[in-house]
Length: 358
Image (tube, rainbow, N blue to C red; front, side, top):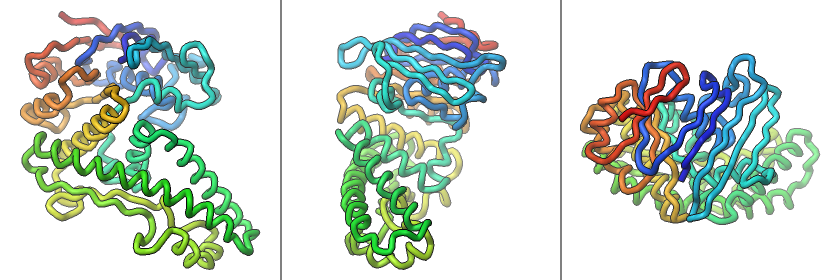
């Protein structure tokens, strides 16, 4: 649980210190006041990057040389302190419990996050890369050693593709063997977590909206699974050499989400798509929680946007039970009505400042 956060020079948040309670924290205020920037700062702390941009410069306040976020909390009954500083030139420094970390993945291990933002619909409508990232991000918290496996496959793929582009792999049988071995393991892990997602979606989607009762997931491995990856790579060896890259494997995997037997993005309204996205992210959170025994921190940007009060209340009902949630909206009343009678910690956001509300 994140108990305290210090934010310096993140967009219009010049300097903030906020204590966070368990349960729900709601930020409300006008557009541009700094609500989403607050979520962005928490995301930077827990992941090491923004969910709004891949670059550091837009995140850092104008005329500042860097931005800095420090968080304090407890995990599994043990206190922690973690922090990250990002500079305009791209330099990043991060520490956990006073120790400089070699990889930003250590931040995510300390503070698991589940993000639901207004641009998240691209998860359903966009390229397969985003859906692979959803599976792999979940597996990072669920399967010990998954990150090392993912890095190994990515390294082998880069090496083989580099050789193919330069035409120096006259016979890459050894590369194909290692790539196939790592790729099969990666695909097995992904297939297992897809099964968990499917099970959770069958429960959560109808609970949020009866219109989502017939939602299904189909995992596509990135090659014809009627044959091994080794066989697929051998079959495509000459074509890969001609094209200069590896055409089959887990890097081409996809996750198809369907509703009533059709691709969800083609038959659902935008509001229904947002509810389906919420169901996916709730599934992710529950899978992480069950595997790690530690509920993630949920970041929800503008929950009432495109959803009526009944559906907002249905979403909030799934988030109660001791989970830590930070959510935003323009209007205070909409968040209070959605959360119901349970306690909620309210902050008004204006010009980059937060004021606690009673």
